[in-house]
Image 1 (spheres, one colour):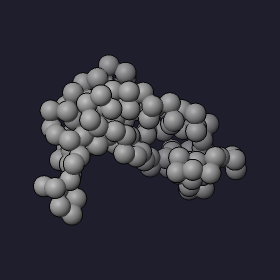
Image 2: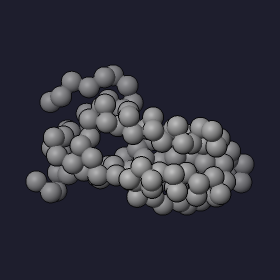
Image 3: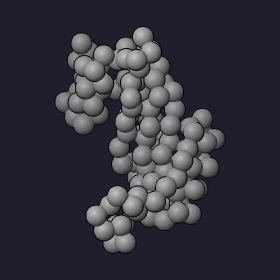
Image 4: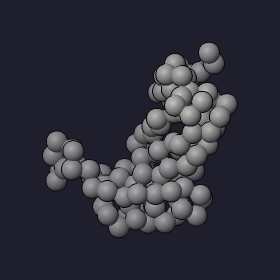
Length: 118
């Protein structure tokens, strides 16, 4: 078991590894970017695609009060990569560089891991 930092990213990495993923092998990673409106989400998606991400934009109608949410749109940026602390922090930072000037921000990430592909 790898020793990860004691923060949200480190805890998520530890969980992925505990679920049986081989952390030395690539896996699909999905990073969510919260955006205030559809045009901003699309602009983030276009910029992220130039960095090699696959993207999808959607309105988060699961929010309790989506009409009052300040960031009801999501741009999901996906990439196959080796999931390490350094890699996930760097990916979030590069997406935040795109998002922040547009009033958006990285709002989390997830993966199904690669345990089924071993």
